[in-house]
Image (tube, one colour):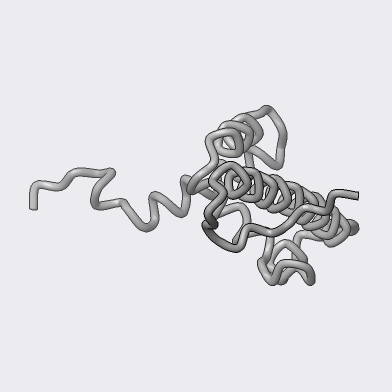
Length: 119
């Protein structure tokens, strides 16, 4: 059996170094994919039975709440931004409620910008 040796640094054998480096990168990539799959599974378990009040509680597996996860995702992921926009603009009473609450908050905090004054 030919066990992979971890990359420990450069030696006098460049081709062997390159092979060790590639093997190490493959191992790390495989480990990363396994960890991501396990993290997703754990988070999905945390979401079972999630309630509106639970939305703001820290998830046991990640230490983040769903509102924190959403804010982070909306800040950086175009697919999530598009999906959220599609949901928020759909013809559903909950989406309408969300839109109403958002514009009420925006008007309350930014009325001087929205309504120009002569001052």
